[in-house]
Amino acid sequence: MAHELLAPKKHVEKTYYLTTKEPISDETKNRFFEGVDIGNYVTAPALLETTGEREAYITITEGKYHQIKQMFEALGNKVSTLERVNFGGINLDRALERGDFRVLTDEELKMLRESPKRSLERFVQNA
Image (cartoon, rainbow, N blue to C red; front, side, top):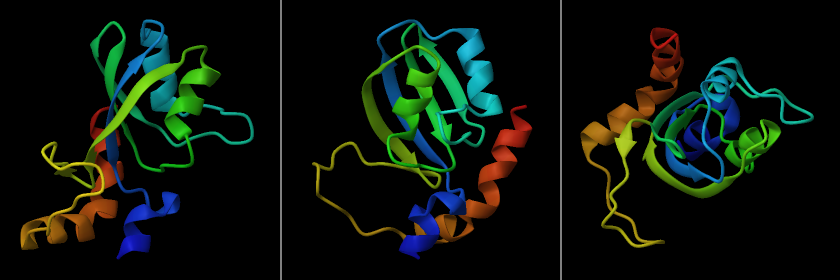
């Protein structure tokens, strides 16, 4: 199950809260939705929802090494903070310390098993 959830090619949704050095433009949001050329690779579409001039939530379905930072840098901005808040439809427990864990519920396990099937549907609905 770990491979099914963690491999970038499996397209499991991962949502992050982030802040940036510069304001986030509408053009940036549009480019993220289309996919961003980060040098040797064009990313899959990402959903970027701003909550402030320099704050946003981003949902990706790949999760390549430093992908979000590379996407912003390719568009002339820099990520200041980045925190994963959701994985496969499960909101991460903010009360847990780094390295801590909790047992998943049966419902959460079911959601994770179905996650790759649901991931791309959300992007199409938000188009």
